[in-house]
Length: 357
Image (tube, rainbow, N blue to C red):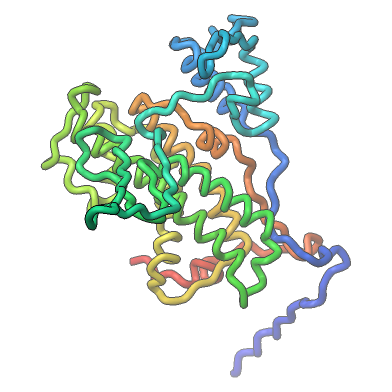
C-alpha cells in the first residue's frame, strides 16, 4: 500500500487589515519605567559619593531633607537641597543622571573614567632644525605606565577611552532603534553602521575595563592594597573572558561571584560581535527579534560593569547610569494582528553560525 500524500501547506502572504503603514519601523523603545530597586541603589551610591558616607537606602530615606554643600571653580559656596525620594524621582523620569540638571557638582573623575583628550589641528616644525612640537598625554592609569598617546601633527588623542565607549553604546543603540526603518534598505549601510558601532563598543568597554584593572594593579597594586601576580594572571592579549573576569578576585581579593547571568549575556553579545568582526562563517542574517535581543543585552553589559566597579570600589559614571536605566527595545511585527510563530533555531542569525558540538 502506498502512504497518502501529506496535505499541501498554504501560506497566507497577503497583508492583514492591521498592517502598519510605511515607513515601517520594526523596533521601538518600551514605555515601562526603570526597575525601582535599581533606581534606589543608584541614588544611594550617588548620595554616598557626594556625602562621603556609607549609608543604607533605609538610612537615606529616613534622613529627610538635607543639603549638599559644594563650590565650583572658585565661586561662592553652594548648597543644593536634596531628598532621597527626589533624587529617585529624577532618575526615574529622566532615565539618566546629569549633575548639572540636579544642581550638583560634576562627578569626580576616578582613575577608570578620568581622561584627557586633545585635538591638534596643526603641525609645528622648528625653524632651526628638523625637530617639531610634540604633545604627549600621560596615561590615566599610572605615572609608571610606559605607553602614552603622542601627537606631532594634525590628529586626536585620548588618555582613556572608557567614557567615549559608554557614550558610543548609548548613541548607536538609540540610532539603531530610531532609524530602524532603514534596516530593510539592504543596498545601503547607514543602519548597519549603527549596529556595528553598538556591538563593537559594548564588547570593548568590558575588555578595556578589565585591561585597566590589570595595568592599574601592575603599576600601583601596593597603593590600593591589591595583589599582582603576573604569572598567575597571565597575559592580557590572549586571556579568555573567564580568565579576565577572574582578575577581579585575584587582584582585589573580592571575587566577581555575583555576575553569572551578566557574564552569560555579555558572552552571547560578544559572540555576535565576533561573527560581525571575522565573518566566519562568511555570511550573515538577522531578524528583528535577533536585533531586539542584541540591543537588550546592553543591560547585561551595564550590570556586569557595575558589579566589577563595586568590587574595585570605583563609582558609577554618568553614561553608565544611563545604560542601567535605559528602556528595553521591543520588536514590532509588520502585521501585528497576524498569528506569529516562535522563531526557530534555523533562521536568522542562528542559521549563519557553526553547529554546536
